[in-house]
Image (tube, rainbow, N blue to C red; front, side, top):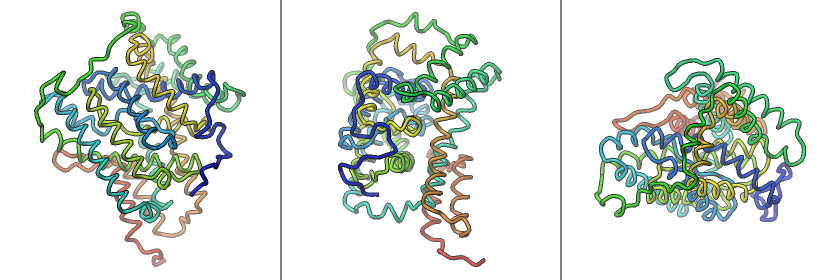
Length: 425
């Protein structure tokens, strides 16, 4: 799908290179910020890192990604969940210095692969990732997150069920659907933001919001940056590098999946322009930046892809605004605490829609590309990818764990390459 440089996507309300007015720009950027905030700060909270630094590094990393991809790809870089378990283990042994070196190694792996892709060229992508592989992969990206969304709206951190959680989530979901279908003008561009705000007010009415951290937070709060050679002495940790670096190949499959979804949404081929070399390099540099300030490895975020799909606002300027706000808000204690106070049921209710739209995009690929499921090979490939990916049948080899999405993607690619086009009936 190679489009001319002046191409405009007729399905987009605001296309990639178009800049919204200042008022719209503010609301649209905040919408993306709120959508990714919960997951981006959850990773450092689970690991024991500083959430403010993760927010800062995600914003700066996104700006660098957009710069490296020449402002052609509307994507947001947030904290990656794939590295949580090894980072928790490293925090108990090496502390953050080990995580920093592992994160740096992850970024370098991306850069090395980007150089290999530059040497080989992009023609292999169409053969390795045809619609029968890409469609189910995209569906898995959305549906594999369904369990996480459902957990947010049913139980608390102790595993206790609360009907109030479910009620707030469903109300948030229905309000967001209504905003998306029936609003006009500028309000039609920010249904996710409106859904989060209204869901937050509903959560307040149900008594699910704790304002104490907001009241106690300082207006200006400098994140506790972890700078090599300044915050800690330099010491090489081979174990940390070997724990995190291989997982980069896992997140690369997610990276390619998200780029594939964006290709379909924007009617472009980012694998060719700006090229997979630039997208991988941008992702790698974002992780390298995180390693120098105290953040975890980052990757592109499905939540923000979902926002693009629902709103049909693909402007890269909106993502630049969201990234800038993230970096600024990391220094504003009360604003960070206010966003952090958004309860899980609200995020979960929004996630139902965001993750579902991503999954539906995968189904759309299969339909638009006229994939024939009367062919046994197509049925076998899609079935294996869907069940392994959605069920998260992960592969664990020693200390390395590969997610169900990664296993499903690799298996789907192999099956597509080896299975005959025709089978005995």
